[in-house]
Image 1 (cartoon, one colour):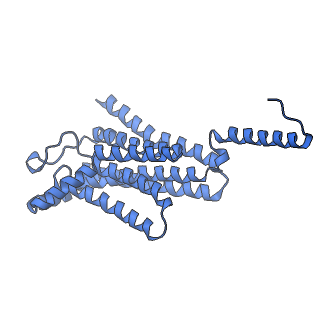
Image 2 (image 1 turned 135 degrees about the horizontal axis):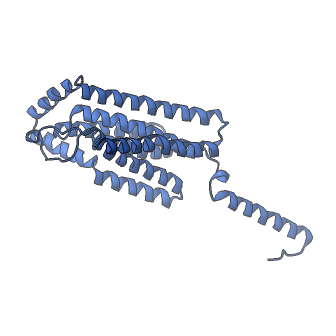
Image 3 (image 1 turned 45 degrees about the horizontal axis):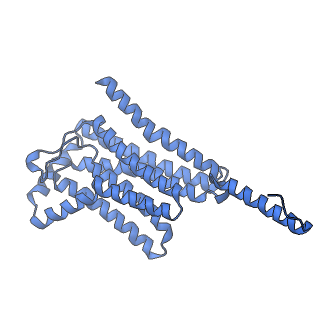
Length: 278
């Protein structure tokens, strides 16, 4: 069992640290590592991710030691006691919006739209960020192995482990990365409304998980923090990709060189009056 846990922890370290570091290093090199703006972008993104990872670690320690579990029972009991028919229906809809099916459909749709617009690298980053979130949920759930609230309190019976909340983590990452991808196309107050809408939806999804007794409050909090850390790395990658010059992206340098050569040949043909050999 200890060997399995060690392998799982090593895999999570690889996913959380090595993979993002490799992707960011590649993008930094192509975006211009000497550029202060590029370095500042990386510093901010990585710093936010590290702070959020540390915060979720503290929450997990608080759960393990019992220091934070004193918040879980009163919060769950209050929500169960104050349930109503309309609130339960609303919570079920919110839970569906933060579920695997909805988030997968949104991610695939966004990737197809970005691909149709010719932004395949951005589409791959969006898909990779969402897929990474799913792996984080599975890995950390088995690593922490925390049980869900009592089945008697659950509106819908859920299996598996509780910590972190997959709905909370997934909604932070998917709605966050989609917001980051769409925001540059908007202007003025529209960006703020988009951001506020995404934040409100993420908070409501988290509330629904506790209301339905699928998770404890600390499960949701851990999901938000861990998802926020992963989102910070994903958004940093998107910002760096936007700074990569077109002629420095894979596949464009060859085309640019070919176009330049063709233009030079055409100029030479015009000057000599002789057609170039084809």
